[in-house]
Length: 166
Image (cartoon, rainbow, N blue to C red; front, side, top):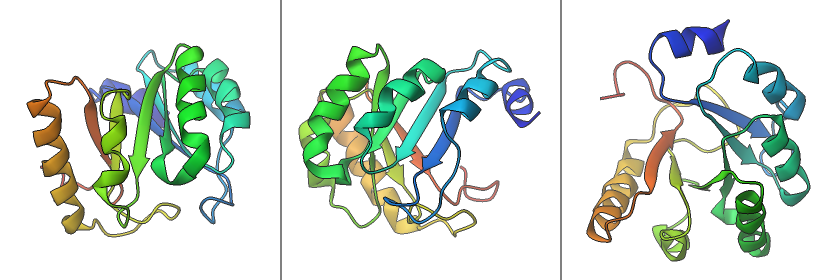
């Protein structure tokens, strides 16, 4: 119902948060839910994997109907092989960054990812208040992407509501 309502309201895509109970404390949906939702809209699914390890799950989410798969820059040494795996599955690559992680962590990947997801809350818990200081990251990223004439999209995630969405 909610996925159909978002599509009817004009959503460009559907962002799906997946949490593993390890990388972040909460545990949420898996590939079966993504697969079940796929039949309710043709809108692209951006599946945000807040997981560690993440590589064993990429193919399952790709086959479940994800159009893009977003992983966290903070996963360390598995980041490059994970991005390669996402690309090999024919999916768009996304890279997320937590509020406390410096932008220098994503700078080497600006050329190789399709989207950058700036977390505007600490990942793992719903209902948090938007952290306005994270907008500085968005501004810096926008300038860099424009300066380099990249097509990388920027998304923000967390605490967005009708009052602060503009």
